[in-house]
Image (cartoon, rainbow over all chains, first blue to last red; front, top):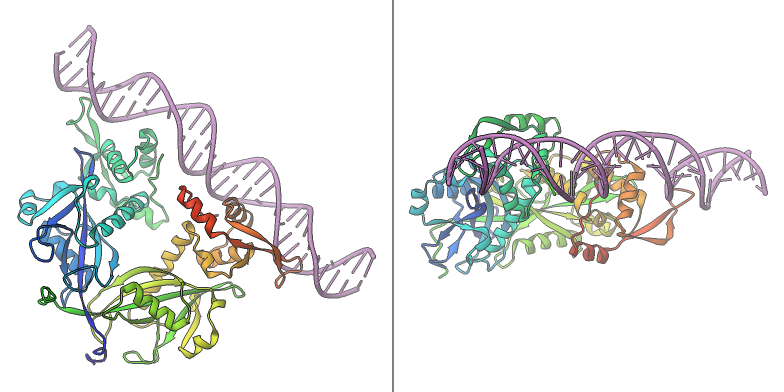
Length: 234
Length: 234
DNA sequence: AATAGAAGTGTATATATTACATTTAAAATA
DNA sequence: TATTTTAAATGTAATATATACACTTCTATT
């Protein structure tokens, strides 16, 4: 029974993770990149990746890679696309499934990050990446833009408590354009998915800006009843 | 150089094709399914699939499978998702990348279809499928619904010449609901992507319905200038 | 008490979406 | 050749959504 497929070839299978973070202070989207510590392409910039093991699913492999690198689990992650060109990896034929993950930069311990040779690099100023990793990143960016429009996944890139200004800055960093402050607030608040806190953020202004929290439970409840998240604004 | 990855395991890699067709007369979306002629699961219903060869890309493998089955090339096809659960195939561990294709039922020669053991089965009455193929189909259906809303891919399921009634019926079959005739026509015609022909379809009514053609060149031109196709109607 | 700087707020206009019923064309039939 | 039948084709008013736009508020600092 285990040899029925034996006339067919087998292949190396990898996963690569496009890990997005958002820098609140710099108002910039970032990518977690690795300086490769092995051949081929030693010393070059790369996505975090790894080979799929015998006994693990693709999703498990992606989680393992992400978790090993960051020390974090339960992160937002989603399969993106599978890259299967014959010569995409000069080392050997490797098919790679790309995943994209969203993490709060603040969640990642800088010690762990450094130890693993990982660096946050600004999206607007990416270094050259090995193989087809740049193609993967570009697809992930497109996907992210579409995703944050119609699913409340942007919150994964922010701390639990965030201000409306921070949320808007995040959307502007993803959309690569300015959005109207009043229209943005009107729209997000009208969904009634944000719980205003009794506390203000006081770093960036004298007046201070109210903190909000995203109410996931409420979103799930609404979504069950046919509600659609939508944050497309002028 | 070819042995640097040799400590990692290799895996069987397959592609499976979700092939959609649309039956104008029955106003029904259909799937092209195979009665399996080999073990495991001989005799059961399955998507068209095949193993990825040494020297072919994933896309090539999917095209080969589709082309072998239908005798057709240059069909609309798109990668959908990769299924990598360890035990998804009882024969051996096989990772499978699903593709979905859109073809005009009229384009497929019934002789070729029969010879390959392929059958058009109505979406609303699918038989049990092997492995996780039903999961693949469900994902493809969701994707199709989203796709036809914002890309002019529905035309791939129709003949070159089609009537507005046929186009609306197709959308209704995909959306699984009725749409308003006047609003539908207003919207599609306002995009000015359909060229009215000097000829009528006369099978289904005395009055006859004007034939139209989708103007792909015009769409490409508009899309280059930031135009977005949109066919979401009440 | 005055200043400075970011947070917070509302309304009018334009655009898009929805709901809805009658007329038209032409073949078939009386 | 007048009438019937059947599906195709058509327009408008009401509602909802999206957009454009500028001033006030708050509070730490001087």
